[in-house]
Image (cartoon, rainbow, N blue to C red; front, side):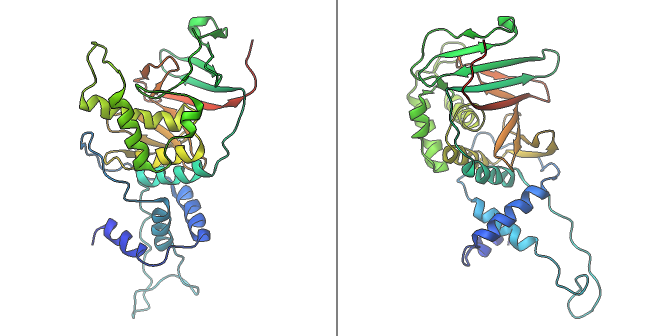
Length: 306
């Protein structure tokens, strides 16, 4: 019986109580020190979301039970102490599912402007900041503006970009909260968008799959998606077979994505604190080769600096 079959068998019984789920999620967050998973590349194929956060928590509840009172565990019938097995490395899906639970419970927040700060390291170190008003006006501050806050072109009725698809705040809030439905919605929107490659041609099937995946990344990192939608996006990302854990890094847990991009996720808060790619608010996909990627902060604010 493989791990997934064992997990399904455990879940055939009644669901664990919410207290068990919560305690197990905290155990997962405390255990997140894992090593790197074995590498494999399966292309852009996807699988259904076969795990839920309840499933991950239930598995941990079974695997982290304490030894019985009275001393160390013993081999049955021998009285001989046995060694506890080493703690298993926490996988990328487990990290993402824990982040989904935290994201779903976080407050939505509010403010006059959606503020995103991207801090780039390496040879081209810089800080880019965006302020986006839900009515479609936007401002930028960075190296190319000499550190001044300047307006970003004309008002855009749909100012929050995914890849090939721009959305209003109301449309973001209306997105599906089921991971499979969310992914399907984005894929269909990308297919019907008039998106073009840098050479001017329409996106291929591979390009549309990439746009769908990157849009899920945007939902958890740079646009003001509501908590339930962010949770669904985390779960959808967890369904990709070749998302891998790279272990603990500053800001949370490192994840390597199917094409080599990287994320830093804090499963305790459900925040993405670093990324090697993001969608700028003039709808460009930006990627950095620096191993540290870019540090990202995104939140609502009522202040627009002068």
